[in-house]
Image (cartoon, rainbow, N blue to C red; front, top):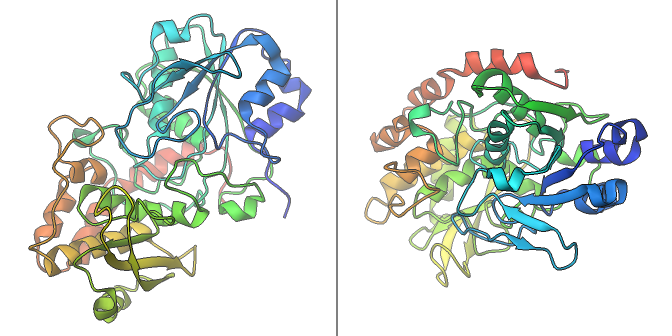
Length: 400
């Protein structure tokens, strides 16, 4: 299979593309903004455009992707090597200011997304598009693969009443879009005013590809996603951020394992396996584990739990698997289960669990002692037909 060429790789290789950009340049990027040889986007743009590159922007976790946790803001600074201003769009503001955008003619965006609604980079992009809509700035998205494939949709559509920085737009949890397609959908269906948006599409990309099939190198897009496998499980394990169930942060395989100090995985393995078998949820294997988080939830305590091993990437349904686990854990360990009650991603007057789910109906589903899967599927399917129809209008890469 031929290697996929990202938007960044095409910009670096095609003189016709380079000749389009005559003015001053800014770039929104992070550590995963690399080419096939691990060269960073900022270095590539400096080689191509020299002193025209005047400003750099970083998303959540920082320009160098070193900030571990949510709601830990990064500062603006002058980079000691590049001698360029690095503006944080996860600081006192999520939206670039007029001053930050001053003198920029072309603003490149090169961010590796993970294909899940509950991930902030796509909202940094849509905030930027909204800010640039009334400015003479061209926003150019250098497209990258959706690492968990761009054809499987899963999870409920966000209810705008529960919008936050972990869910701004009415899209499902697993949205099956590339980051440039998110930008296209934003401009066509969600933006009040369209920005001057252009896209440098990938070459050789097919929607059904997972990340390994692209033959591109993987650099973790945020500190707690060290593996491609974690991008797949993340679409489900991110739900546990709204609870006191550990999603494995503080371990070497965060977001691939889940657990709690009171949980005995060996004792409960057959119980959960039987549930998943009855629900015909396949494509994964639960391995009983004991892990010891060094920070975050249950730091320096032994947690019993399950490591989620994916055995069939096409049939694995991470959102459903983890919704069922969360509900069942809540009833098995009623005295020990808690929802997160402290601040979460700046959602005012909203519960963390509802922000993550993009609705309060799923939290109400957890309360029912019966495992009514039909109700969860009803919640999931509401609005999906319209989303799928809208999505079809903006796809950059055809369905197989």
